[in-house]
Length: 372
Image 1: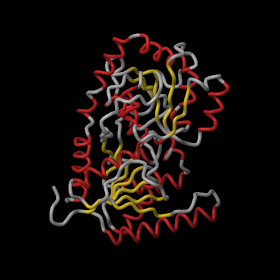
Image 2: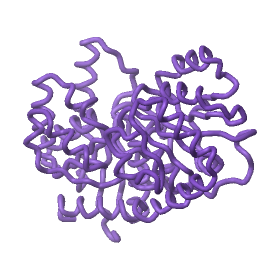
Image 3: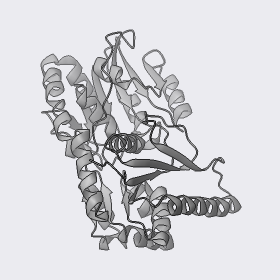
């Protein structure tokens, strides 16, 4: 695809800790590196990559200090981030910069504008929890950055309306929708990853993911020989551990942390539950479906309704309703025919959301934006 003089692509994100946006960037970076592009990833904060990255990909961290809340630190952090990012971009002069998540979008956009470098920004979750919460001045600054981007890339169609329900983003007209790609996992092992049957959930341990709701719903599931495993790390670990203990579920609910062999857990799980209060386009749901796992998901904003046709390739339930969640879990556990049907149809996501298809859409957008 690219031979003599490889074009440079730069991805930017806050960090490369485990998460959906981080996985998407890692997948895209690996794909374009293999295609012959010279790929760099800039992290606003120091972080060890949670996902595999090809040896040819350059990873740069702008600031290594731990984030603090004081005004002086914020000013220092802002100045250092901007100056270091600008210095790197000026040196490398990538054909295009692609940033993920709000903070990286703003810093990358401002820097690229100062250097006349084409850039794309991408939001991954509902703007109600990011841009729409900004003060009027910061909203106007963000709008100016997003308006001048070659495109604002969103993973689901519903997010467009989420932007347009508040000023000044009602005026944005450069949206592009590109769904997340399926992660390419190694072949699952046949060795048991857990001594017994289990329901699986995965994601950052944060209020957004609704694991507190899932734990409360799981308490109502009467099959004592089925456990609940939640994979991920985050700020709510202590609170979730307290909830598990208070509900007397310490023997049945396990917080297993971040796991690199998620393909084994997806393949061996009885079912996968997405309990989120909000999303952008949930990678964990895609991954579980790609491995042929029967799935239940909340019909939250945004993404699950773009992915699941309830009753066909998964079950959609009302967001925040623990009783409906518990009923859906028991329904799948008690009906092997329904479970098999959902699992079989779920695997078709491998065709619609393949890494090759998604990467081709991104490359077409990059080419339109830069003429490379």
